Image (cartoon, rainbow, N blue to C red; front, side, top):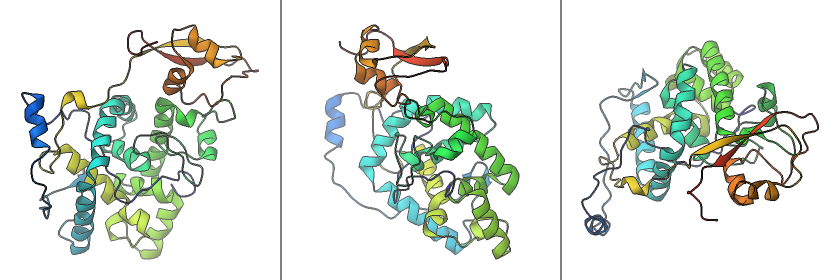
Length: 307
């Protein structure tokens, strides 16, 4: 959102498969899989699907402008293969965390792709200062109850930041009337979208003349959904073992200051790096906690890292 959430928008940023997608064409042997990797490489024009939708709201593909804009995103995103494969891998790791939170709030599952185009499912930092998977600005984070200071930045907490994104999206939907416009408002802001609808005397995203970033925003999300829910159709091949997995953790509750997280980590047979990987919202090597707030720190279960 332009004044609230400022996304890291990369041209053609590829999205990710739904959690339900499985590794494709799981070959019988590694040897047969490796042979496939050296097949002749060809570039093809893409056939436009007969029907596409976002959150159950159908694209008017009969409109030649909409058709061309959708075709552009399908082409751009299909042929950025290295990024696509990375996102397949990350989706397998992080979608199981995001999906149930969206469902709890009644947010359509398609919005997980919005998180992908915002950050590539990484804890990105935008030039405007938006942070985390959902690219939340500092002011918005505080408005929605996230803690942001030198010690702690809960924009990097995937569960808590997803909750905030859901609350914002619900407000956008109530104000603008459709999930498609709510998605556009995540990029341009509720006021920005509302003013353009009023000025141009239309009520639909696909009828708006918008700037480059917001004009491509929803089309990118839909391209990700289409391509990465039909990986073989678009030429992507991978195995279950190629995907990333989330290391299971347990929670340690802390209501005091922590003077040295390197020492703290050693108490649980892990090192400082691993502690910070699982708790990126801890921004320094110590925690002041003068208010004696209760924090929940994730510790990986034994056996997943070599000490």
